[in-house]
Structure formats: C-alpha cells, structure tokens
Image 1 (spheres, rainbow, N blue to C red):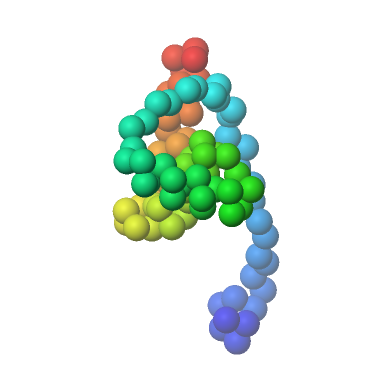
Image 2 (image 1 turned 135 degrees about the vertical axis):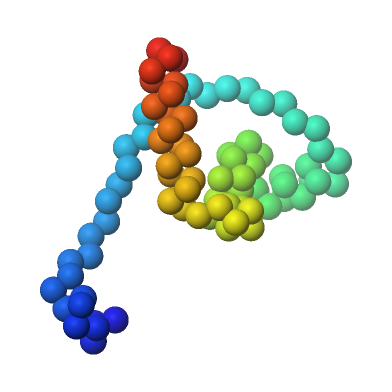
Length: 90
C-alpha cells in the first residue's frame, strides 16, 4: 500500500466512538440444556460469566459478519437508535 502514489502523504489514525451509556436490563432466555452447558463451558474458558459471554458473542464482529452486516451499517444503526432514545428522553 505504501507504494501507492495516492497514499504516500496519507495519515492513518484511530477514532473512538463515544456512545451514550444505556441502563442494563434483565433478559430471560430459553435454551436446551446442552446449549446452556456449552455456553457455560466456553464462557469459563475465557473467564466470563454466562450473560457476558452471550452478549459478547451476539455483538461480536463474527456474529455480524455471518449475518452480512457491515461495521458501518451496525454503527449507523446504533447511532440512530441512540439518537432516537435521547430524543424521546429515555
């Protein structure tokens, strides 16, 4: 890439997004016993709780890639929801 003349004077930098914090809610799910066991085993391998592991798994890059959703689309959707929530006073 450095050999590309169009990028010789380019500067790369990271940008962090500061999304508004939302409150934590309790969610009950139903799963097969063997699925819950597998989730618990995988979560313990990375020193996480079941809920933390499930949230991370559901919102991971791999999960979104398997659904064909780009990072840009995800961020846009999140920003739209956050803006809507703020406008409604929640």
